[in-house]
Image (tube, rainbow, N blue to C red; front, side, top):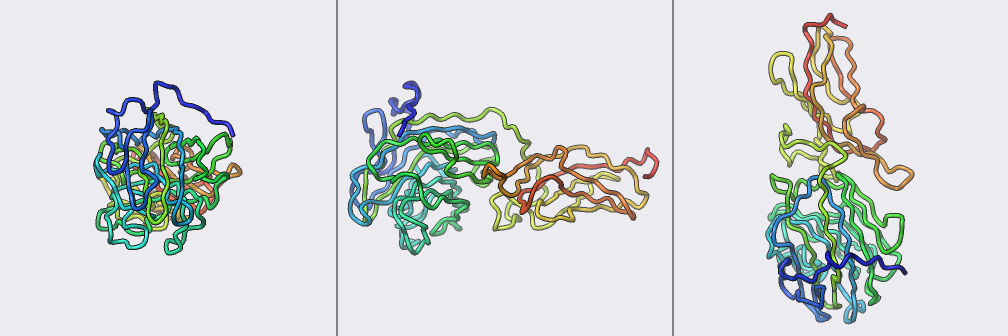
Length: 362
């Protein structure tokens, strides 16, 4: 196994940069999130919120050592993005330090709301339908009243190429190019996990959130160590993103999609001959507006992201609205649809259009 070490300037030597919570403590240049004792939880956070809307690229070295107790070691650690605060800590046991409960009883300890976690899970909780005791999952917590056990899983990898709790140092890379999140481990060139993720539910109005790590033990235990961490937010995104002026409430998204997908299209008049259109990805018929004179349609602006089925690379196929919007005018209606993205699709485009009354009818 080849370990890619991080530049010394980006290591964890300056602990004043981190808020250590619960059982977390300094370990040389790194941080030990939990000791190898039962029923512990620990977290480390950057003290200020970081920008996320344009994406990020982060790498870290970790080690899980001295496992014992239930399943010869438990329960794992998570890379976490959250908007609850820089002193946040969730439940112990299977909760991983970010979810609710102790891994068995959901009401035992509150979880961290408004959270996205990439959880390196080392114990198979049958009641949570875990696929193994050595897997990776992307999980999300929502509003404080809706933090459930187990948390909503957006994606998972059932078995990893090495044993997480083998006592060895490993390297992880997590790359987020909105809306695609990809995880790499050690020197594997192919991603271990790749999934569409909508971060907006866990970001504030400026596209920012707290970032760090959590870990937990329960009936099984281990040392969970973050040895080095390189954090790099992205300045600009290569894909257009949905503006904050969407015309539907966030709770109007379909529940079985990772990207917000409105249940139906919406056409809203702005002024005479001008409309705002929300075009959901999953509806083949798209949206339509009345155009009895069959006037030409001008596309004034278009934002959003739509993702379809995985391509040959194993990654979902995602696109902004450029060259994806088809406008057809016939029988007194102008119809809007999405082309060139394989199904099943999720996400939406938001358009502003105008009927050109100065041009001759089509």
